[in-house]
Figure 1 (cartoon, rainbow, N blue to C red):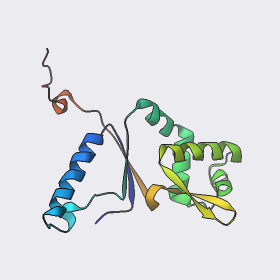
Figure 2 (figure 1 turned 135 degrees about the vertical axis):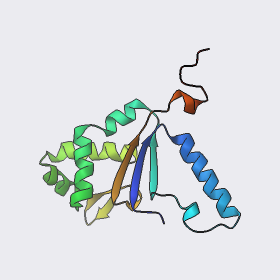
Figure 3 (figure 1 turned 45 degrees about the horizontal axis):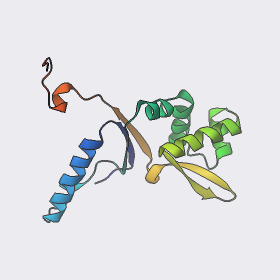
Figure 4 (figure 1 turned 120 degrees about the horizontal axis):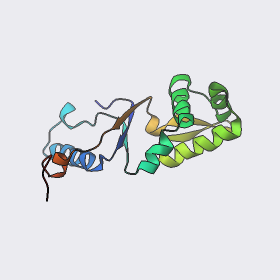
Length: 142
């Protein structure tokens, strides 16, 4: 069963594509159940160091933590939760929206920041592929 997690990865696009293709093939053959489920509600993959650097800023991580832990009902409540200026928080939340990590839900006259796809948790996975994963043997030279 797909859980309520937003999985954020780095340079794993090919692995996600292969896993999705495998799940689709299993579903097309009539297979059902856990064998074809994606483990996370939504997988967001970053391919550049610049995007990871934007995401991993302390100010942005504090906002993600506040959204998950406090579930603020507005941008102003989010600013209060992290004890920062509204305009600065608004700018950072727009950056997180641009990165695809959060989205805004209408909340009366305001906007409520929530994790992408209605997820309730975040799982970060940053790994660097070894040469063996790229088809080369470690220590091999050309």
